[in-house]
Length: 408
Image 1 (cartoon, rainbow, N blue to C red):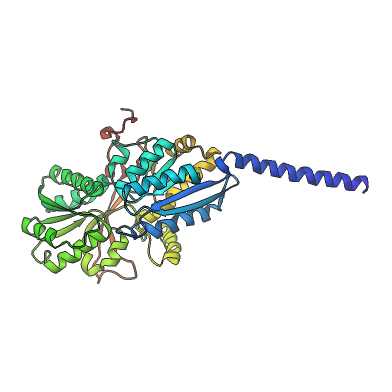
Image 2 (cartoon, one colour; image 1 turned 45 degrees about the horizontal axis):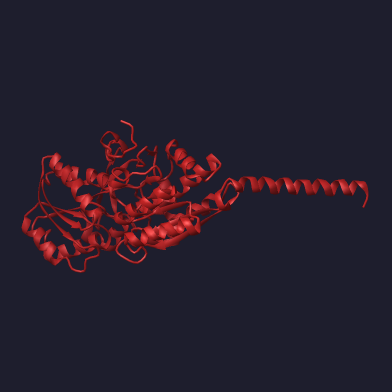
């Protein structure tokens, strides 16, 4: 081999070595050489359509759109069904972190599960971007420096729906409440709003999660003579409440329903003939503008249904988490959380979204009314946006926060 060829070979080897070491240097900034995201959700029960497979698809779309790698390291998504049981959720989160080396956990629909998982991620110092759960305890009494509460909470739902309905003359309320932390939190928050706006709460009844029969609960609501039946439940429980109410003729007797947490999937499953006229608060509507429609049509191609605020929120949360890793040059939880809290979130999901020091991601919410069948002009044309609720109004003010590390 002549001298020229030797020099050329040496240059090639040096170039390969430089590229390889540069790639290793980037990957070494990522713990275990990969970024793992765990989608912990309900895949088999009452909230499986609210989160479930839709949340998994949304997370995978976010990773695919990001290019499948960050800082040269591969991004993987793993999933599990927590079965709406706090002990299973906490056990899975612990296993994921200790054995699977998961860096971030998301969705975590169901408030009781979310609280249990949040304690694990706080102890293990892992990023937790809860999207599907509603309890305000996540950013109040049980706040964590590793928690982001992304899509909505019970305060925002109550503040949007209960305030408007009460001010419009629905001044006597009776609550149908799921008997666990989400339902009781939602009932309390909505009751406070009703009373603050001059209304009265005449009573409430609590039913088990995933109840099989609502007859006795509906009879109590009917006997209360309340103008408004507040639905402090969600998913299939909420759908079955409304279907049962139609059979019992509560609407014909003059009683109206206020949905505290109604996803577009719920409206689709009920049908507009059942849901029409209902006021509810949303964090996302697929048909709000061209940007939301663009994402939603891509999602529809995979799921054959439009995304709700939880599905869209999971996509946004995963994307912004990956952007924070890219910007900081590491997946270190403390550095990533600091970056998330110092960066405004601007995407199809949120405009000028901000993650506060208590972990609450504040963004605009929307008061919507369900259209009548005659008003709906095309598939999934279900909502009319009545009002944009500014972020500062929608969520608990920091001045009222019970989070121990919020500076006052």
